[in-house]
Length: 528
Image 1 (cartoon, helix red, strand yellow):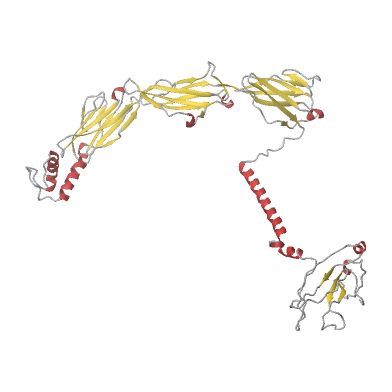
Image 2 (image 1 turned 180 degrees about the vertical axis):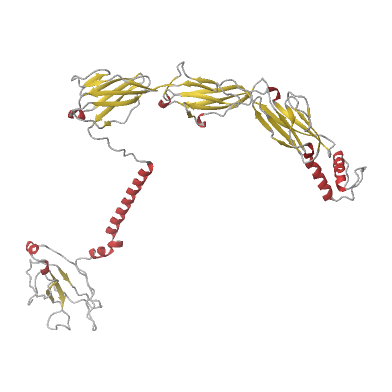
């Protein structure tokens, strides 16, 4: 590896003492050095000249003390500082202060070159440069810092467009305002308020900073765009400047005058707690600007402010100004009577912007508790109602379709009037498929008769093996007492119908089923 450039030769000269070699090489080849040794030497040389500056910038008020530090990882030969408003300073721990500037640090042998200014002023504002001389460096190393000596800006200015000399606006108008703070070091910050309420950034443009012609002084301005509302009336639109050197005259404001018609309220307006025979006062607070006029209408009588009704019992007071667009209307009733609680009191309020009617009802009942609910309560009620509706729907659906707990009753209800069943005889036992259909025709005498006498009439087809002397289609009518432990056969007339079950024989073989004798309901068979 050859060292041909000047910088490479200087780096090698720095590395040679570390590696134990002679730096007096003339365009030679460094054959005895390994790459690792040379790299370690070069890195060591670069690290020696890397300057750590703390802090890189300081904002200070006039006559405030500040300190800067330039530090390296090697022994220093000298430490020099260039400060605006001062001469070039050669600093070391043994020097006496010069015009408030003194060495700051633990010593040059630890690589520390620091400056402390006991009292800064306007002349010291600007860039400070530290220059360091090292034993291992043939050239000086330097770094820069910045000292900002704060300068008080001018008081803020507020400019509002589209307004008259009274700063009057109508509801819905848009305010275009600009706040300007001139000639500050550094630039001031701006905040906007309506009275003590901070205006969100959504109504503001980003601040714009302009560098002036007078040195490094800066001017900042910001725009506000906001639609006015009735609640803005009487409030102060404020522009507040924030700056470390600005201790007074940092606020400018304009009081807004928003004109609007009387604001409506939910009619009717109920008033409670009045007593019969006693004086009653009806009071209502109204929002309007400019100052409104009022009149009361009571049972087809109109009462102006300050007037009485025809009976002299009711008096309307003059409107009371509560400030910032709030006014109070008062009506006094000398002694409350029953018909007073059944009367509508209509208050008409009007100004140059419009008019509004308010309907007031009074009652001797106590004022009800506040039943207003929050959003969560309303959501809970809605969910509960929906859940109840779902449950009712499921119950009705299960009842109609015979599902779940209604499955048994549904199957019983689906039986037809007469169903065919298999009643073929078996040698071991008879297992007929039976389906019952119940019919009931209540009679007046049955309502008086005890339920224990309730019977069932059964038609039983006779089989060939049981009775050979009877035809197959013969049917025996029998009535069974369901309650009486000692049943007795009863013969009923045709009209005396009871609940019965009819068992019909069904032929399952290929042969045709035996003919059946159709009987009229309720007629007993011969010989029964």
